[in-house]
Image (cartoon, rainbow, N blue to C red; front, side, top):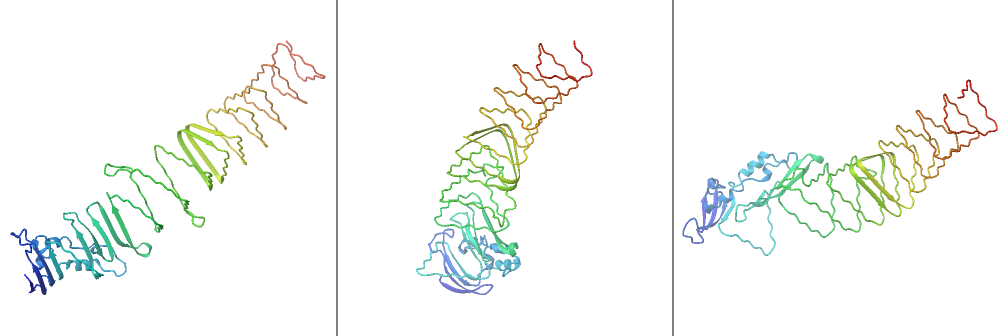
Length: 417
């Protein structure tokens, strides 16, 4: 048929129709095309999934709404109530205007420029010659796409954060991403929260935990967290792993920590710490330092030509358990000030070599229990003045000689046997 005019329920229309342009023998194989301008010819068929195939309304029935019909946008500029948006969309297929359909292909070519201005909404749906839907929705001033090839969802809504703003939420599953970018990049984030999660505590075969690899080659790497003007109130770092391997190779390493309180706790079955260097310099400045180590075995080896350890201030050291201290070589210990040593339990001191003890001031030795002194060879004691004050004194010897210029004994009773 050619061009004809008609009367629809809602007004006039102009119809250009070419039915069965492929001269098919049956209606099921017939292909047609039409263009209708003006009113809808039969509103009962508009967007009706059961309409005749030649009308194309079965395809039109797949799009009957826009995302903005139910989008949360209360308080946004140029706000339209949800009821008004849905009322206008309800007339999408019956309002009339331009309606065309073809059972064949549609090809449009333009050698020059092309401009399309759409005052309302826009929706594109592509079935891909099957039932997999893909496309995008342009409504309410926003563009969103969707596809059935993987689970994906994008929502855009108006929220009252930061005095009102549009919030975009994107969700994608089962999609590989390979990005290569050549050029300068700048990433800036502002907001109340930024969260990044990789894997989960309960992985499944459908959602396994990945293998994470991060490699960086650069001329220079700088990382700053907080600043003196705006420090971070709290930084928490927690790592759980079966094995941790860390290797750093550098010409020079500088590590500086400044804090009021430092607490370090290490719990392990075995700890081995080995440092080999020509020069090691470590400086820690703090008001208080607490270091606690709990382990079955702790092994520490330091190899150096000279080790200098200086502590200025009070030192308290408590060891609960056996202590073994072996020094191969000369040992010098100098204490300027009072020294207090308390041993609760037995004490065994063994010196294999000559021993010299020098006290430049007065000395006091107190034993709260029995004391035995054994000399396997000669003993010599030199003193300018000596006074022995004893409650009961017993002396047993096979032979004893005294050589003195004067020997004074003051006693209430002297018994000789």
